[in-house]
Image 1 (cartoon, helix red, strand yellow):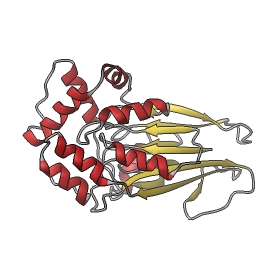
Image 2 (cartoon, one colour):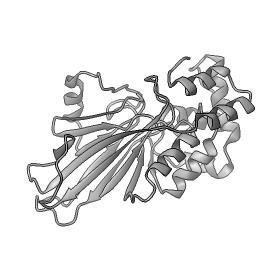
Image 3 (cartoon, one colour):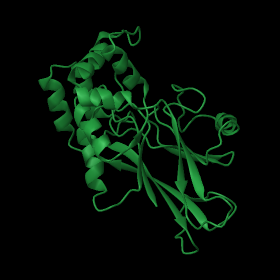
Length: 265
């Protein structure tokens, strides 16, 4: 079983399309999206259309929540930076009625149970908790450099085998406190000076013929159920995004952010 993990697409459909093309021919039983599907990139409708077509299991991120506020006629204090605020306003104006309703359907978190058929452990499913920031706080930044002690604290209060998060745009996989914590990185805006988009694939396998890898870890004491996580960095045609930003006369700083793969605002 393969599961595609995405987060922080931020309206960057060309980046998402590159991920789709990269995995052409692969079958994913589930596509999980940890939020911030909209804002900063110029293609929010295309992104939401794609997520709907894939029947992705999506949640709201902080940027999505503020777009919904604008759609409800409300306002927000942060971000106060005009160059950021306009990106929210443009997204809210762009969204079709169908995609407004679709975005409203996203929960702030969700838990899914993956049936695993003939596993002989007494459990017949794997539980995945999906959050934007962390299981404790929706806007908490968990990154590859977060102290392990924090992951142990979080593990004490979750009942999931796997916790998938986003928000930090920082790819990682940590197995701590008998919980797999995974962030796929950003499928729209990476900040590590590499503009390639990021995603991850979970593979769950049963049986004795599993090919061991450095990232292969036991999900439980029973070795017949194995989990592996692979992160991918995928280049895309950045000009498709930057040209649309320019056509919409949006702040030039975003053009440079996409070109450089850095957070400049």
